[in-house]
Length: 309
Image (cartoon, rainbow, N blue to C red; front, side, top):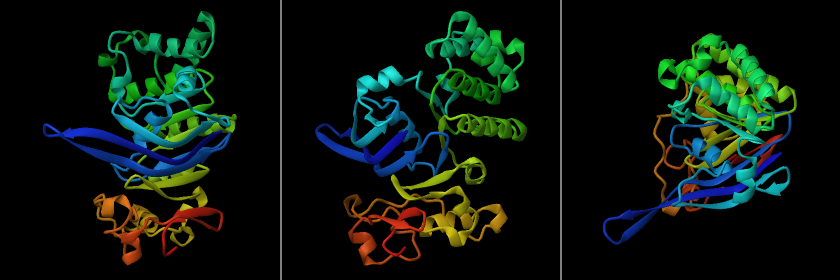
């Protein structure tokens, strides 16, 4: 349903009076989501995960330059097509609760999202009520404004707004941030249920354990590059992984007793961005890792970008 090939996003900014520099937070991103599946995107802060969701929806600022291929239902996501699909066929659960309109009650905002999907006024209100009940939001919340509810409640309202319509692709950007454990589990279960009903979900998260638990497959970002993609089951064992960074990442989970060696720093992009995204932090790196970026290698039923995989 969604195909992304060799996506690159760059931003030009002025450096002093006359100089200009180009920042490239996403350099080589590949991803594919099929109908009825959840694909999780994991990686450190600054890896470009949220930019991916904004690129799909055409929400990048004017100074952004996008190259590569974005396709939905087999057709290119052109600016005009994105505008027609946004909020209808493709919906976003944003990371920031600031996406809620501060001047309107949250119930009205969820009902409007339902109307955008083509429901009548009566159907929209009924869908809103069902969504509020599903996410544990009391009737009294419908008339409240965003400043009157907690961050966790605002997150549930945003989830309700994104899922209340008929969107076939849900982009969930850190959907459980600010929620307690019980509501977090319910929100993730609801995403799994949507996928089981035939929708597809792109889950953007720092929580690799949650990603492994509910996803069909997982893609790992490092320094703006997709370095590995494989079935979620492969991430339950270090031996099933292909890339050194992914093995380090999974080794650092509490259940693995924090044996991983990830230091938490995003590697500095060296050699004009021509080398490996993990160069400078990888235990296996050699000169070729500095000189050239590795191509995708099909390994078992997944793939990785690593010269030594």
